[in-house]
Length: 219
Image (cartoon, rainbow, N blue to C red; front, side, top):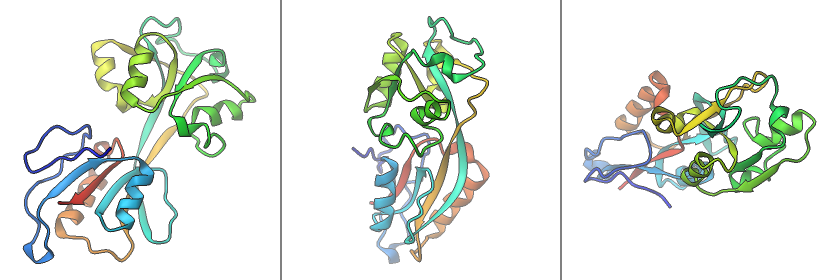
């Protein structure tokens, strides 16, 4: 489901906030809306013209889209604060091969291609199988990790609040240096309003804003 930041400015899970000021009337644009979606959904909405700009993970090589790398999110092994390895630096990821892992459902299918994917990381180290449970929700995954039921490879930015209150910790791993690249995508040849161009400029100068797949839509 897509969560919109509407004219009344209700809460959105995205850390990016977009102006709700009306766009030029000549273009028939009423307001700017921010929504969250999967990376594939972001590309599809931009491609269909339902969004003027989107933020997604990983490069989309589709010829009808223009992608620009604007940030990279550092990934970390996340665990409960009671985990024996919490805060302790390990030499290699293989030391965690017997742990129970949580991952998004489609991550297993993409295990041979994504560098930030935990399955690909273990395979690169000669470990073909790990124990894991598919989880569809980031919040559910964090709650399960907090309960000590397993560990997960997540963006560090996704656990800022939990680390602040002390409910989650990380396990530094010396041979694990991975990041999730964030790309801005627009439709090739599509119209970019002054507000959209300003947003792109903002993202280029402050890439820390881009921390989850987001799209800017027309209301």
